[in-house]
Length: 150
Length: 132
Image (tube, rainbow over all chains, first blue to last red; front, side, top):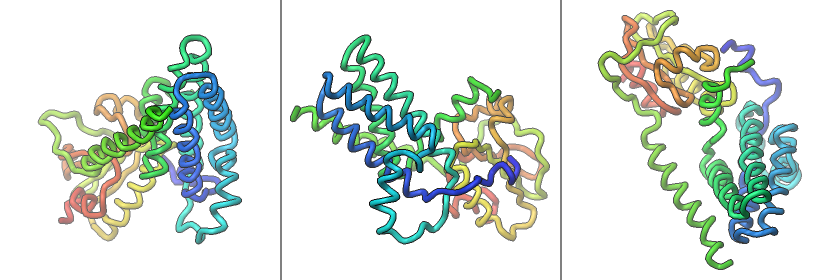
């Protein structure tokens, strides 16, 4: 990769996506605690919509990102360094796919599908918030090997 | 509902355990099997060449570049090269690269003597560069 490609247009506070992932993890934990049913599926659909916003606008443009900027960040010191916004944005798309498929299968097949999807998304969001693990980073190359860039 | 509350807690504990186990392997310089495919198309350093396969959406790749750059600063003859995995899919498949960053350590003759999966510690990066 050339240096020109590696340089992001603007960096974002790397703590933002992690705090956002923590908020998402809490919402997903509620879905899991509710158990299979209409309420859980509806809540999962709400979470999927949040991921959709993040997929389009980036993690920093998501509702969770807004919460971070307005409530959390003013209480923190400035970030030591900024990060490329593209990986967190890709992670939002991964979340959208997982939760979106869960909602779809819950509607056309069984409500348990929403719980399974929520469990997968919860693990990814929790690990991202807790230890900074990036599931999207792990998946990106595997997806690229199957679908080369146009 | 009480039982279901345990589900996210149990998942969180299990996820942390699995992550911890995998994390111990990250950054380790693993020796390659004899006959393992070689990395092609890079200009070799005089002593060692570190070829890092990276992806666009990959925060750990940026971290690895920083760690290697700092660890290898001032080390003559040791070169760190970064390749976009998406632009070298043929090598990615041939070498069995499934995640980024994956960094191959080549000797002066270009033979692969090890590979590192994930972000190394500064000590691991220095070892890969033959500095300790």
